[in-house]
Image (tube, rainbow, N blue to C red):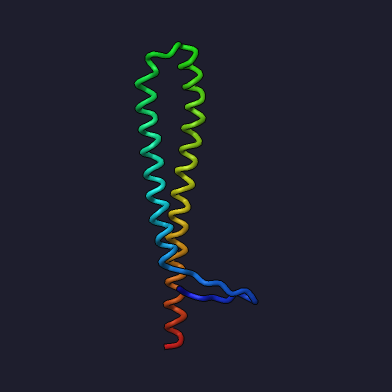
Length: 102
């Protein structure tokens, strides 16, 4: 854990917690993508039994669903990357500042 003070505000950065959350985000992203793929697979098997109107409606809604899923995937990737960058930046800064006093 590293403690920092910015102006009058103090905060701490927990490297292990950051890395743990980063790993959790990767697992969530993978599980989400697998769940969507499984739902797709199951739905596609049943579509042959649906009327053309029901299939058309499903395909329209599925298009919006797929767009939202892609957006969620992009956000999760961004969070994963951001947490990695924060971890690396805080760690690098801490090493640099520690070097000034050793």
